[in-house]
Image (spheres, rainbow, N blue to C red):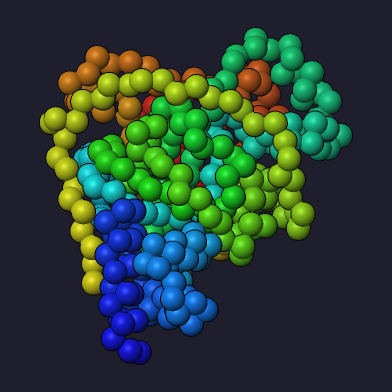
Length: 328
């Protein structure tokens, strides 16, 4: 490759890091810049940067990404704050404030099996509890995969965001057992998608996979979405140790994907998380979580029905109460 191409590739690389904290495999970026120059030898620096950035938005970070996320979280519920900025890929997200069964039923506004009528009747008879959305996100820098929880309402996030969308995470972010507790100030949507994830990790298929059902090759994308309003939260971080930004040496990234359908690795991270203890140790007045206080609105006297519509309530209520979680 001629020197001018090398120089311009270095310029794009520096701007990637400076503006969006993006780090990619050098071979991919060099090839991208070379292709752009071949298509238009007179392309300006700004246009070349925009061309490479647009290609990155559509790329799978499992193929082109470089490890940027540091190891975070402590044993036994210890916590730290994650400083710096990190460009990551959203593999999928799901609302854990209510059972997957209910969400799938509401998606099509119809019953899913013959027992649904009786289950719905019991729910209507039970005391109505207004639920608040809480999203769980699986994100990756291409080498490491992390889980994020919507600790405060984030209007920019929704279940309609395409899988593979690129996000910019901005510290300080509280991390407990490698789970990132996200607030509006922590997340910026950069855009993009990954075509190989659009079907397998579509919101409907995330629900179907959690229920052990066959995936839909044509998942529904047009549906009503919960509207959230962001609230100001004043969290104290002064006494929490900070994990600095650490970039490991570039290398070919190992493929990390949720396509394998194995979320068991998350169980250990979600053990022993106690939000009340976290708020108290940060020097703040202890407040109950803003999220939903209960996952299911079913009456407690029917365990069989509870298992049908609630595939993983014990896991995520355990997150809020400091208990152990089961399999997702």
